[in-house]
Image 1 (cartoon, rainbow, N blue to C red):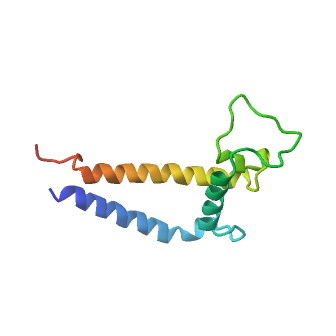
Image 2: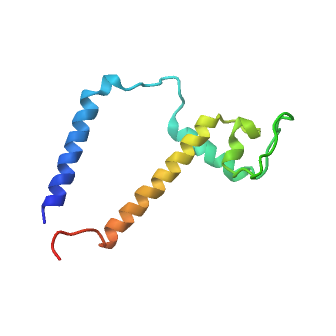
Image 3: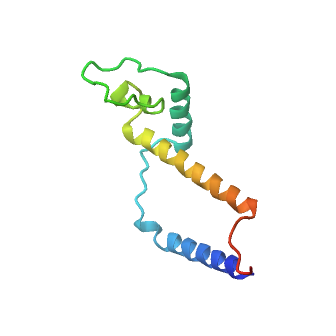
Length: 115
């Protein structure tokens, strides 16, 4: 019964140890803006703009119409880079995954060693 919690705790300690020991190997970009402000700005832009603003004449629509969050890219006339918008989309996907796993854990349908 205690085995899953012991395994989880051990893995978390190993992960923290690796992060602390390899901290100098990670690339830290100090020129970037605050990531929380970036996420909020991209989401606000997606909420307020339903069509491209000041789109360049040299761009064209693909076969698929871009989503509202993609309209924030420079390609469609938005103020954000492709990387900034993709970072926000990845964060939203990860939040969805974490929330669904957390809900699954709370529902009590998780695994158990005893039958």
